[in-house]
Length: 243
Image (cartoon, rainbow, N blue to C red; front, side, top):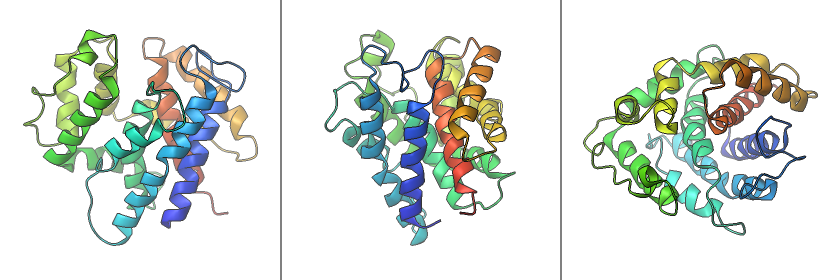
């Protein structure tokens, strides 16, 4: 996939996920407080250019870090919208997903490649993940987020190692713990979404059915995490279409 196509598909994935009819989420039918549909759409469009930059770096053989553009993407996402960050988790799963797709043509193994990437990522990636959390959470009312410094994690060698540290550093109800658990289990929610998508022409309906089914199976998982995995799966599905 060339960089232009990557940017297009990421933008489409962010848009389709945002407008689809999903229980408990902002959709084209529902605007949740401080999470308007327009904010999700604007943020997705603003951030998508950084996936093009990632693709350009890989195309040039630069072997970039996984999350090298994450902070810029978060900062740019808020242009022309409310200051509340709405796509932090969305970008956190999409960067390794796009990276894995760019180096894998095998749709049966591309999600395994995401996990492999996260395990071989660098301490620089850990630093990027820390800085993005500080930026995204600086205005949060939650003390665990607002006071986050990352000092407990800065010495770790890879993003995967950082996520495993989250398992003991945060309660099971916290997004960091749940995010880490998904990686530890092999990204099962992402896999289920990806396997559920079959038809481009009826994709919005498939997203609705898959999301609501997965949410019912996993009531303990935060709705935002399920939505983030959904967007990444949409990108993967579209990226393997021949047209």
